[in-house]
Each structure stands twice: as structure tokens, then as C-alpha cells.
Length: 144
Image 1 (cartoon, rainbow, N blue to C red):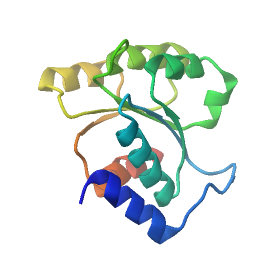
Image 2: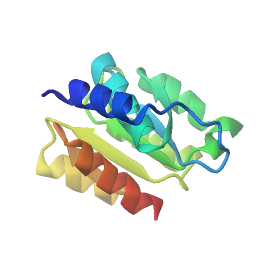
Image 3: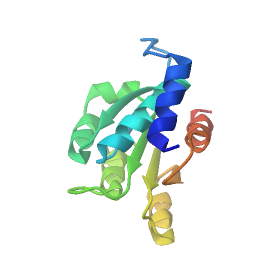
Image 4: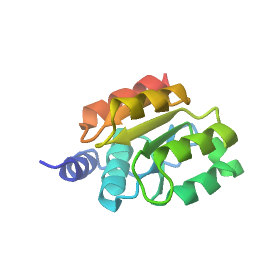
């Protein structure tokens, strides 16, 4: 079963919808692949998190400069994207909202990519493809 299928199945079984609860944990998702962005959003919402999605890194960077970003507690970002890569997004996060933990995701990262991200303030790294349990574990760990 693919990640997208798994996310849909979990979402259907849990029959969850955004609660509008102001105390819920909110996550910023950034990925240029629409299917990955959609599946990850479905999965995280099924687990109980709220998400805002950005298919374009420039849109996410602009969002970091708004007051709205203060409602979010975590950023999950793909490493390899056109225009801006995840490292550029990490640098923008560090400039505009350093209080938000940042996790990079990639199916093509090298060990030096991971080291560089961690040295520049990333809180973690997820290798694609990852399982629903792996994403849940890292989010739960960063949530505290």
C-alpha cells in the first residue's frame, strides 16, 4: 500500500475533520510534490494535527513573515524543490521565526545534507519514504 493510500485509509477510519480547537498542534508543510503534500496533510490531520500546506517554498517564506505563523508549532519541509531548496527555507525560518522547530524530509539527501541541516538549526530529518509511524514519532517528540 502506498503512503497516499495509507494516509487516506487512516483518515477515513478516524473520520476526522479540523476541529477548530485553538489549542491543537499546528504544522506548516512544504513540498513541491502535490501528492506527497496531500497525503502528508491527510495523515497528520487523521492523527489530530492541523496543517497549512505550501507547494511553493516562496509562499512559505512569505508566510514566515506574517503574524499568522505564530499559530504554528512545527515546520516539515522537503529538501529538494525547484527555485528554493529546503536549506534556503531553513535559513528563512531562522531569520523570521527561529522559535519554530524545522524538520527536513528527503528521498535524495546525502549524509552531508543531513549534517548541514542539523548544523544550521534543523531539529530533525525524515528520509522518504517514511512510514506513518515515523512521522507521528518525530512530530510527537518535537511536540513534547
